[in-house]
Length: 309
Image (cartoon, rainbow, N blue to C red; front, side):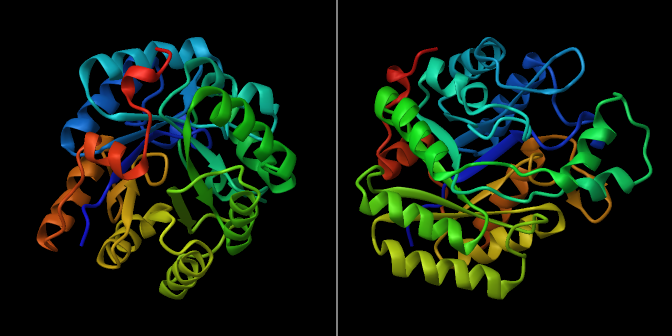
């Protein structure tokens, strides 16, 4: 069995700051969380940005630069910048701005549009810190998180081809795998593909074991030996689905973007908590983890010396 790559998604565009006191918001907090997660065993750090003043999602390259520079100077981790932005109101230019400007080794790329409904989060009783949070969550009932074929091709051209950046292809449903196959057949993406299958988010595929198996069988049939498989699952499904995937030879993603918890009713106090937990599970299963440089080789990345930060 090959070594497993651990990705840590440190802070998401969809989660809101009041969801957990431990969710990093400022560039300094994001950098510190990322560095400790890398020390805990994450080879890849997946990143969104937030306005430091009120936690609103941001695509501003200058905000990204403040923490990616600090992470790079203090760790060897692969930096992976989101092209999904922080919400459905961002234009493609806004949500891709950091990837274009900073030319990281990796960016995430959603392989389709999605009715990603987060409104149920607003129904939970809590002290909301900012006045934008509840309207944002409730508004997702009527909004589409867009990534059309034109959008995907635009990102592949302006970030991938122009900057030498490779992608974490986020596939929230079976159709997204077929979309990725289309771009592979057109020659617009090149193997090895890093396919991140996503489970348990409202609007995407569920988090049943049969969903996991179906996505894996479909990816195997479509991509054969041309891809590396990874799994992320939302909320309570995070660790069980990651464990199942690792037993099937897959890579895993954890982090506060995907789940705020470390156990039943217990908030994770850091991203590193989740990295340490999945690493303990992998160790118990006899699965070695990949270092950042091993992950670079596996995924055919350009190297940290080729980024623009």
